[in-house]
Image 1 (cartoon, rainbow over the protein chains, first blue to last red):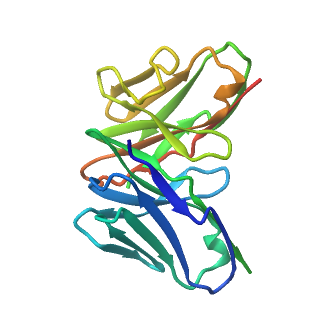
Image 2 (tube, chains in turn green, yellow):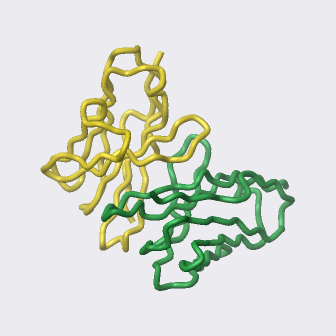
Image 3 (cartoon, chains in turn purple, blue):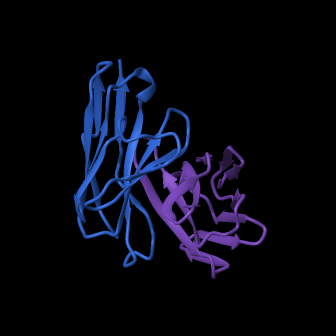
Length: 113
Length: 115
């Protein structure tokens, strides 16, 4: 059964810092990995999807890397801003032929102005 | 991208009653899913909603408790039956397609409180 772990569980930093959020998964037979953002009282917003054949994906100040063999992914946030405050979730396909996702518990990020 | 609308956005229900949540996608999608997010927890997959056939449920979830319908490519419903306070959660619908390169898009969720 696929399990996803995210470290740290919470992070509070001053504005402008560069951040790294970590995600690990137990079953490396995945075909993609997705990073989401969840704001309080709202649904999930997809940030980046990395295919298993890719090593990284970039969108603006966000960069996600994938090391499938070691079961790890990182989300790098450059020059953090207060608007980046949210919970960041990592998810991989659950496996067994299903396309539903298994999520980590998330990293609750606060960027202090 | 796909825009997903869920109704209702929130509800407060009495123990023993049932609530049906609707999910509408603005474009045809291949796969639709239902998730539960219990207070302070991450998302857990309930089931895959299959068009025109019975949903595929994850371990720990059963059709009698969470009946799901998907009559076409853009619409699905989830019913939470015979509710108890333990069913108080956020229920989210998601959808994806090959055209969307398997990116999963989510609705805003339905916040359910059971008294």
